[in-house]
Amino acid sequence: MFKKDFDFNNIIYRSADFLSLSRETQLFFRLLNPIPGDSILSIGANSHEILKACLEINLDLTLADPDRSKLKIAQRQFLHQISYYQSEAEDLPFDDNSFEYSFFFNSLGYTKDPVKALEESFRVTKNYVFIGVINRFAIKGVQKTIKDFLFPESHKLKLFSVFEIKQIIRDLLGDVPVKWRTVSTFDLTGSPILQYLGYSDLIQKSPFGNFAGICVCLQPRFRLKPLNLKIKNPIIKPVNAIPQRCAQWERYYSKK
Image (cartoon, rainbow, N blue to C red; front, top):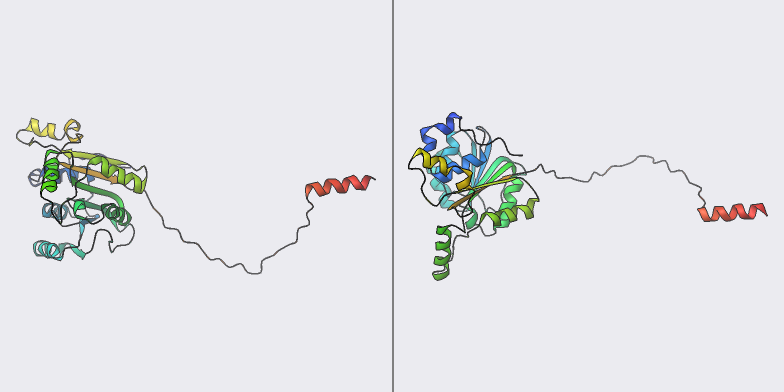
Protein backbone atom coordinates (compact mmCIF):
# COMPACT_ATOMS: atom_id res chain seq x y z
CA MET A 1 0.00 0.00 0.00
CA PHE A 2 0.96 3.65 -0.24
CA LYS A 3 2.92 5.37 2.48
CA LYS A 4 1.18 8.10 4.43
CA ASP A 5 0.33 11.23 2.50
CA PHE A 6 2.84 13.93 1.74
CA ASP A 7 4.32 15.31 4.96
CA PHE A 8 4.04 19.12 4.90
CA ASN A 9 5.97 19.32 8.18
CA ASN A 10 9.08 17.79 6.62
CA ILE A 11 11.74 20.48 6.61
CA ILE A 12 12.91 19.39 3.14
CA TYR A 13 9.52 20.15 1.64
CA ARG A 14 9.09 23.41 3.54
CA SER A 15 12.37 24.82 2.28
CA ALA A 16 12.48 27.76 -0.10
CA ASP A 17 14.32 25.61 -2.65
CA PHE A 18 11.47 23.12 -2.80
CA LEU A 19 8.77 25.78 -3.01
CA SER A 20 10.66 27.39 -5.90
CA LEU A 21 10.41 24.21 -7.98
CA SER A 22 7.91 23.92 -10.81
CA ARG A 23 4.42 22.68 -9.92
CA GLU A 24 5.07 19.51 -11.93
CA THR A 25 8.18 18.70 -9.90
CA GLN A 26 6.38 19.42 -6.63
CA LEU A 27 3.60 17.05 -7.70
CA PHE A 28 6.25 14.39 -8.35
CA PHE A 29 7.48 14.57 -4.75
CA ARG A 30 3.99 14.87 -3.28
CA LEU A 31 2.87 11.64 -4.94
CA LEU A 32 6.06 9.58 -4.76
CA ASN A 33 7.21 10.89 -1.36
CA PRO A 34 10.63 9.14 -1.61
CA ILE A 35 12.78 8.34 1.40
CA PRO A 36 16.27 9.94 1.29
CA GLY A 37 18.96 7.35 0.63
CA ASP A 38 16.76 5.00 -1.40
CA SER A 39 17.56 4.04 -4.98
CA ILE A 40 15.63 5.63 -7.85
CA LEU A 41 15.73 5.21 -11.64
CA SER A 42 14.99 8.04 -14.05
CA ILE A 43 13.82 6.58 -17.37
CA GLY A 44 14.63 9.45 -19.69
CA ALA A 45 16.64 12.65 -19.18
CA ASN A 46 13.88 15.11 -20.01
CA SER A 47 13.96 17.10 -16.75
CA HIS A 48 17.21 18.20 -15.12
CA GLU A 49 15.18 19.92 -12.42
CA ILE A 50 13.89 16.54 -11.24
CA LEU A 51 17.39 15.04 -11.31
CA LYS A 52 18.83 17.91 -9.29
CA ALA A 53 16.02 17.75 -6.72
CA CYS A 54 16.51 13.98 -6.29
CA LEU A 55 20.22 14.50 -5.62
CA GLU A 56 19.51 17.28 -3.12
CA ILE A 57 17.53 14.89 -0.90
CA ASN A 58 20.29 12.26 -1.21
CA LEU A 59 18.53 9.74 -3.42
CA ASP A 60 20.74 7.12 -5.09
CA LEU A 61 19.99 8.16 -8.67
CA THR A 62 20.44 6.17 -11.89
CA LEU A 63 19.65 7.61 -15.32
CA ALA A 64 18.76 5.53 -18.40
CA ASP A 65 18.23 7.18 -21.79
CA PRO A 66 18.75 5.95 -25.39
CA ASP A 67 20.08 9.35 -26.53
CA ARG A 68 23.83 9.56 -25.94
CA SER A 69 23.86 13.35 -26.32
CA LYS A 70 21.32 13.77 -23.50
CA LEU A 71 23.42 11.56 -21.25
CA LYS A 72 26.52 13.66 -21.99
CA ILE A 73 24.67 16.89 -21.16
CA ALA A 74 23.49 15.41 -17.86
CA GLN A 75 26.97 14.08 -17.12
CA ARG A 76 28.53 17.52 -17.64
CA GLN A 77 26.09 18.99 -15.14
CA PHE A 78 25.95 16.27 -12.46
CA LEU A 79 29.35 14.56 -13.00
CA HIS A 80 29.73 11.34 -10.98
CA GLN A 81 26.67 11.91 -8.76
CA ILE A 82 24.54 9.81 -11.14
CA SER A 83 25.01 6.36 -12.69
CA TYR A 84 24.47 6.67 -16.46
CA TYR A 85 23.21 3.98 -18.84
CA GLN A 86 22.49 4.28 -22.55
CA SER A 87 19.47 2.06 -22.92
CA GLU A 88 16.04 1.89 -24.50
CA ALA A 89 13.14 2.09 -22.06
CA GLU A 90 11.73 -1.12 -23.53
CA ASP A 91 14.87 -3.12 -22.63
CA LEU A 92 16.42 -1.89 -19.40
CA PRO A 93 19.77 -3.50 -18.43
CA PHE A 94 18.82 -4.12 -14.79
CA ASP A 95 17.75 -7.12 -12.73
CA ASP A 96 14.26 -7.51 -11.31
CA ASN A 97 13.46 -5.26 -8.32
CA SER A 98 16.75 -3.33 -8.66
CA PHE A 99 15.31 0.04 -7.53
CA GLU A 100 13.00 1.29 -4.82
CA TYR A 101 11.45 3.80 -7.23
CA SER A 102 11.46 4.63 -10.93
CA PHE A 103 9.81 7.37 -12.93
CA PHE A 104 8.96 8.73 -16.36
CA PHE A 105 8.86 12.53 -16.47
CA ASN A 106 7.57 13.62 -19.89
CA SER A 107 9.57 10.74 -21.40
CA LEU A 108 6.97 7.98 -21.84
CA GLY A 109 5.54 9.74 -24.91
CA TYR A 110 8.90 9.49 -26.69
CA THR A 111 9.25 5.72 -26.31
CA LYS A 112 8.71 3.40 -29.27
CA ASP A 113 6.39 1.10 -27.31
CA PRO A 114 4.92 2.79 -24.20
CA VAL A 115 3.26 -0.41 -22.94
CA LYS A 116 6.52 -2.36 -23.10
CA ALA A 117 8.37 0.55 -21.46
CA LEU A 118 5.93 0.56 -18.56
CA GLU A 119 6.20 -3.21 -18.24
CA GLU A 120 9.99 -2.92 -18.00
CA SER A 121 9.75 -0.18 -15.35
CA PHE A 122 7.46 -2.39 -13.27
CA ARG A 123 9.93 -5.27 -13.61
CA VAL A 124 12.99 -3.39 -12.34
CA THR A 125 11.18 -1.50 -9.57
CA LYS A 126 10.42 -2.79 -6.11
CA ASN A 127 7.99 -0.26 -4.59
CA TYR A 128 6.63 2.70 -6.57
CA VAL A 129 6.61 3.97 -10.16
CA PHE A 130 5.73 7.57 -11.04
CA ILE A 131 4.44 8.38 -14.53
CA GLY A 132 4.31 12.05 -15.50
CA VAL A 133 2.74 12.90 -18.86
CA ILE A 134 1.25 15.83 -20.75
CA ASN A 135 -2.49 15.36 -20.39
CA ARG A 136 -4.35 14.59 -23.62
CA PHE A 137 -7.52 16.27 -22.30
CA ALA A 138 -5.83 19.53 -21.27
CA ILE A 139 -5.97 22.68 -23.37
CA LYS A 140 -2.31 22.31 -24.33
CA GLY A 141 -2.90 18.64 -25.17
CA VAL A 142 -5.79 19.47 -27.49
CA GLN A 143 -3.71 22.22 -29.14
CA LYS A 144 -0.85 19.78 -29.72
CA THR A 145 -3.19 17.15 -31.15
CA ILE A 146 -4.53 19.66 -33.67
CA LYS A 147 -1.00 20.85 -34.51
CA ASP A 148 0.22 17.27 -35.08
CA PHE A 149 -2.75 16.62 -37.35
CA LEU A 150 -2.10 19.72 -39.47
CA PHE A 151 1.70 19.54 -39.37
CA PRO A 152 2.71 15.91 -38.78
CA GLU A 153 6.18 15.33 -37.35
CA SER A 154 8.38 12.27 -37.70
CA HIS A 155 9.14 12.12 -33.93
CA LYS A 156 6.01 13.54 -32.40
CA LEU A 157 5.27 13.22 -28.69
CA LYS A 158 2.54 10.73 -27.79
CA LEU A 159 -0.10 12.11 -25.45
CA PHE A 160 -1.96 10.16 -22.78
CA SER A 161 -4.86 10.70 -20.43
CA VAL A 162 -5.00 9.52 -16.82
CA PHE A 163 -7.56 6.90 -17.75
CA GLU A 164 -5.42 5.48 -20.57
CA ILE A 165 -2.43 5.08 -18.24
CA LYS A 166 -4.61 3.47 -15.56
CA GLN A 167 -5.97 1.00 -18.11
CA ILE A 168 -2.44 0.02 -19.19
CA ILE A 169 -1.48 -0.46 -15.53
CA ARG A 170 -4.53 -2.64 -14.95
CA ASP A 171 -3.77 -4.76 -18.02
CA LEU A 172 -0.16 -5.31 -16.90
CA LEU A 173 -0.48 -5.60 -13.12
CA GLY A 174 -4.12 -6.19 -12.35
CA ASP A 175 -5.89 -4.35 -9.54
CA VAL A 176 -2.99 -2.56 -7.79
CA PRO A 177 -3.19 0.70 -5.78
CA VAL A 178 -2.89 3.81 -7.98
CA LYS A 179 -2.87 7.50 -7.03
CA TRP A 180 -3.10 10.35 -9.52
CA ARG A 181 -3.24 14.14 -9.56
CA THR A 182 -3.01 16.83 -12.20
CA VAL A 183 -1.47 20.31 -12.32
CA SER A 184 -4.01 23.02 -13.01
CA THR A 185 -4.03 24.77 -16.37
CA PHE A 186 -4.05 28.10 -14.53
CA ASP A 187 -1.27 29.45 -12.32
CA LEU A 188 -2.54 29.33 -8.73
CA THR A 189 0.67 30.40 -6.99
CA GLY A 190 -0.04 34.14 -6.82
CA SER A 191 -1.16 34.12 -3.18
CA PRO A 192 -1.21 31.66 -0.24
CA ILE A 193 -4.96 31.12 -0.67
CA LEU A 194 -4.63 30.35 -4.39
CA GLN A 195 -1.64 28.10 -3.66
CA TYR A 196 -3.70 26.19 -1.09
CA LEU A 197 -6.49 25.76 -3.63
CA GLY A 198 -3.96 24.58 -6.21
CA TYR A 199 -2.95 21.69 -3.94
CA SER A 200 -6.53 20.75 -3.01
CA ASP A 201 -8.20 17.58 -4.28
CA LEU A 202 -10.87 19.72 -5.94
CA ILE A 203 -8.27 21.11 -8.37
CA GLN A 204 -5.75 18.28 -8.58
CA LYS A 205 -8.35 15.56 -9.19
CA SER A 206 -9.52 17.31 -12.34
CA PRO A 207 -8.87 15.17 -15.45
CA PHE A 208 -8.24 18.33 -17.51
CA GLY A 209 -5.03 19.60 -15.87
CA ASN A 210 -2.03 20.33 -18.10
CA PHE A 211 0.25 17.74 -16.47
CA ALA A 212 -0.88 14.42 -15.04
CA GLY A 213 1.07 12.45 -12.44
CA ILE A 214 0.21 8.81 -11.76
CA CYS A 215 1.87 6.84 -8.95
CA VAL A 216 1.67 3.03 -8.92
CA CYS A 217 2.18 0.93 -5.81
CA LEU A 218 3.69 -2.36 -6.94
CA GLN A 219 2.86 -5.69 -5.35
CA PRO A 220 5.64 -8.17 -4.46
CA ARG A 221 6.56 -10.41 -7.38
CA PHE A 222 8.54 -13.64 -7.28
CA ARG A 223 10.16 -15.64 -10.05
CA LEU A 224 9.80 -19.40 -9.51
CA LYS A 225 12.09 -22.09 -10.91
CA PRO A 226 11.36 -25.84 -10.91
CA LEU A 227 13.66 -27.94 -8.73
CA ASN A 228 15.09 -31.16 -10.13
CA LEU A 229 15.18 -33.47 -7.12
CA LYS A 230 16.67 -36.95 -7.28
CA ILE A 231 15.20 -39.69 -5.09
CA LYS A 232 17.64 -42.40 -4.03
CA ASN A 233 16.35 -46.01 -3.85
CA PRO A 234 12.64 -45.34 -4.13
CA ILE A 235 10.54 -47.92 -2.25
CA ILE A 236 7.72 -49.12 -4.44
CA LYS A 237 5.30 -51.62 -2.93
CA PRO A 238 2.79 -53.45 -5.12
CA VAL A 239 -0.82 -52.76 -4.27
CA ASN A 240 -3.41 -55.51 -4.68
CA ALA A 241 -6.68 -53.80 -5.44
CA ILE A 242 -9.96 -55.21 -6.71
CA PRO A 243 -12.40 -52.85 -8.41
CA GLN A 244 -15.59 -52.32 -6.41
CA ARG A 245 -17.86 -53.95 -8.97
CA CYS A 246 -15.58 -57.01 -9.23
CA ALA A 247 -15.59 -57.33 -5.45
CA GLN A 248 -19.41 -57.37 -5.45
CA TRP A 249 -19.49 -60.19 -8.04
CA GLU A 250 -16.88 -62.11 -6.06
CA ARG A 251 -19.07 -62.01 -2.89
CA TYR A 252 -22.13 -62.99 -4.95
CA TYR A 253 -20.53 -66.12 -6.41
CA SER A 254 -18.92 -67.10 -3.10
CA LYS A 255 -22.39 -67.51 -1.55
CA LYS A 256 -23.47 -70.05 -4.18
